[in-house]
Image (cartoon, rainbow, N blue to C red; front, side):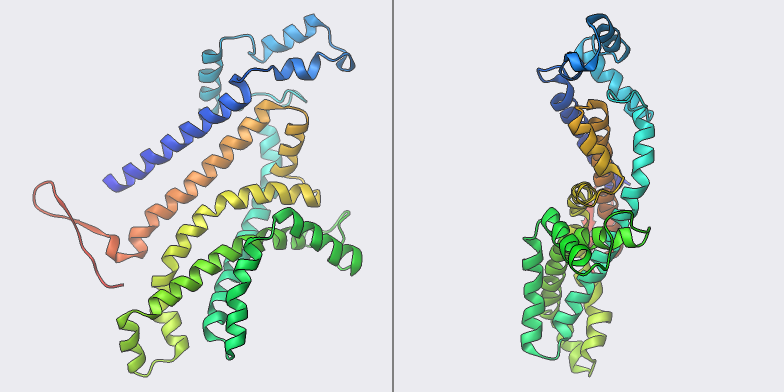
Length: 322
């Protein structure tokens, strides 16, 4: 219980810092987004209308009141109103979030399958040159930017081959290239960590014992190595969620998909501070919750991390071979 409460406390602190940083960078720094947007003659608003708009959005109140008012709204799910459209930010996020969740979840599943498949083939390949080639692929794809990969996929599979349309694609067709562009750079570091973890586990003495009993390479890999090697990969998978979120924003922009990425792009273009702040805080919340789940799963997956309460107030770590 103390371990769980400690991790939850750390998550709350990180979220508080993320909210404060987003507020300071978007609202508290010098500059007035409302004046920048509506003071130009093209807006058609006079000084009286701008003053009323500022008052309705709470921009005239002291900064500390804006901070606590915004914080209280975020705690109850009220993200304010869009400066551009006047629509509640909650409605904008609710309309854009499902498409981004589908894209990110599909890309994450594909990335896991690619990473596991590549790691298995790198250890069970029949030819040394093939294993060497498979081991070098993660380093290649790690260096590939998401936006560049997306443009290449559009150029090859849409413009050159004509297999996948970019304009008005179907639900499945519209996911194939964005998922590929997002999954490959995510799968690369996971595969790299998994390959190294498998290499480390294969050097352990208990693998020699199992091998001496006549177990096949496939049996050793699936029954003895997998559980021990997956733990570092689980950690890197949680950390890569931040890259997955940012990659989803870029991918949606490149492929013209409706989602959080499109909403963020429009908010930046229109200097829509409430929408930007909501996107930043929601992204940070998802990232923190996933990494919290990874921290809480670790003692379950690795018996060596389980603790046992002894007499008094001391705690003794019990190491059990995995």
